Image (cartoon, rainbow, N blue to C red; front, side, top):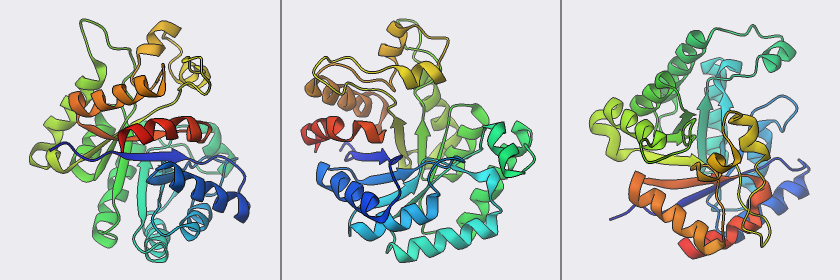
Length: 274
């Protein structure tokens, strides 16, 4: 039996209590299961914002997409994680990444570790959380071998970017990454939940998405290639729903995350999938 879909949405809007409560209730009404908060300097502070979101509803889960693990010592992070897990009555999913924006480390007065050191710290953080907060599901998101190997072996949810190329007749980068995770996970693969982040989709009746975000993160791809990338949706709500179904049927991906600007438009897609 195919896994049931889950849908997440990131929040980047105002952080007043009323704004967060209104956003959480709207997300719940539209069929979203999880509201995600990013972790970037200049953006909302993840834990107070997640707490406000959790207090606004009784069913919506909250999470990070994704927390910069290198900003946190494992014991201090676990203290906040377990507190929010209790306050939300178990409705916390913790997303973790290595951190990658050097300017944010500089602004925070934190030395910017090497890529290898950041990956090692992510692994140590996951191990500490597994021992001291075992009831909190962990998502690890990434595309590289080292991060996906940790995700496969230590996480509950694997966040996939869709790969760094568009699929064509000769290769499928997303299938390649999932095969890598399957091999690294071994016997635990079937228990993993696979997630994909959608960065662009149509917001009007044109069927064409705004490609600003994917152009930034995938500058080497043409617009035609971006439109074929798994993280970009186009067409009608019915077309997008069919494509999401194909992700589950072909790749086993049942968890899809979109941006807050997509809330209402993707809500029409959710209605066709739930």
